[in-house]
Length: 357
Image (cartoon, rainbow, N blue to C red; front, side):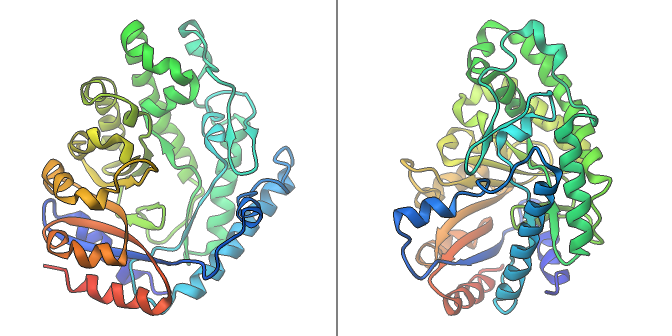
């Protein structure tokens, strides 16, 4: 797959703020409906691995590499803006394990840490990033191993990085949401420290992550410089709370790396404008949540809030792209579209190309 023209399209869209442009990623839906048993089995990612053993980590990484090579072959003739790569998935518990020496608890498809691990603010000094922690070394080895095997044919992101607010949520659990009122000074102090931890962690993991292209891989997309951030806890806060306890520290992380791609959810629609005002943010990715209106159905309101300050990444159908084409022409978008078949994927890619200003 010739990545150069695809990456150039991302670089161009990110380069000039406020200028409209649309990119598209397609995926082909499975032809048959899965039974309940098949659906459950398809999510049993970790059921055959023992992550206490280094050999099982390598076996897991090899399975991801094999799957990526198959996806590369299947995607070659569509011509969309898919960027091949592996986003390493061990679950949120593993994300938190770089800040403590507690082992994640694995389920079939994710992991978690004990609830409210940092139960009291007097324990705060026990929680910090260290390259010597077991899971720090696992993520670093994965980055080096997979990037060497990839040989620049695809990317590796070993650690989608929780934002400062999300790090506290990992360690404090739901206590975070009362800390805003009961322990604001302690919370601000730890959030400031977390900016440094995230910076150190990211630089540590990038040492062995070899790619001739540079930039950052972000869930099948690309930004020419910056960091992939997860900002989920913000979606459970008011806009005012996020402006006080979230935005200053996420701004500081973005400033360290010169840009960012930020993931959050449609549950947090009250934060769309706040996040569009993060200094240096390239992409605001909004995942559609069950029980919430699909972002494409109120696209005009999102565009009014964001004012083309950032690129918006949304999930949509082919029909929605046709329906909302007049609005899409005036914005900055990355569209993730599920297609019925390869011919539809090629058709929708060709249609989106015509939306360019």
